[in-house]
Image 1 (cartoon, helix red, strand yellow):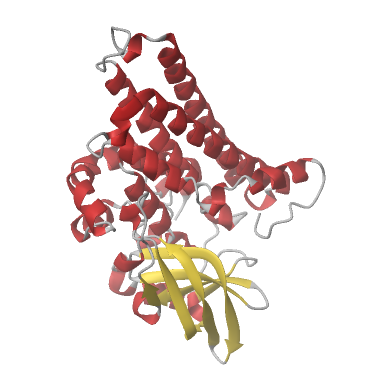
Image 2 (cartoon, helix red, strand yellow):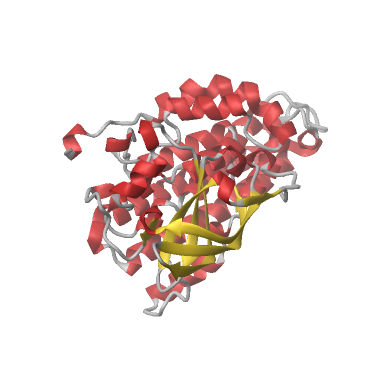
Length: 371
């Protein structure tokens, strides 16, 4: 296997091929509180869950900037679908696990559906593996997953793959925004995880190719930010469609207002610039491989926090421009606003990481593990 023989993903072709299925399932997903099985199967068949999976396992092994472009486009189509696609793209664990573990997860060549949580649980070393105990909150898409990849902390930090039936899913996702992600809590009580189903984050990957070199958590962190930017971009388009036909109290349309014109132009420019910065910093981190620096990682974190601020400000400004029309469920801006604001609550987009990035720039320790 060489870089020249790896498959090439076209994000636009992938997302556009799934647009009809995503649109058709949107109302059902909202009502059910999770992605319907038929849509999940369509995403699986199209390859939406194997963006970061090694080519040997049928994956795209796509560069991180391309994966972010894909998440952004899914977020544009549907915020919940975008977040579930991002959360399910943990196939890179196939590059970290020993062959015996890979064989168990990809048994018979069948592609698994994965879910994951980055919150830590306790992993007690025992003969042949670990006993994993803990509670992991907001695990998107867990009910449709075959395997759940959880973080376990022992003498080191490990990714631990457990079958969905080995954990207890608590029905905790009682929300209005991002409802269709089905992000329930997961608990485990001394679940045995054999060593071959665990991967230490401080050990070089088994598959030594560009995507898997360097700081592995960077393959995960920025995905939710790309989804949020997709939601914000869709909100701009939907607001443009609304205001061009919405009557203003002073006559004419809302689009005739200089304030509206400025909000639209400012929002579109800010979202586009934030997206380009995110993709650029992600490319810098991946391109550095094993030589990635803390400052490059901090730049990616800063780009994420900046993009979150831009997306939040954009959603609020567009919601105000839309006026009372945005109150009604039949208006797409209503769902975009509550889904987008919910997505922006993700811990990876916390403003605390902007502070940490500033600390790094000033020569200090970031103050966060796995930064």
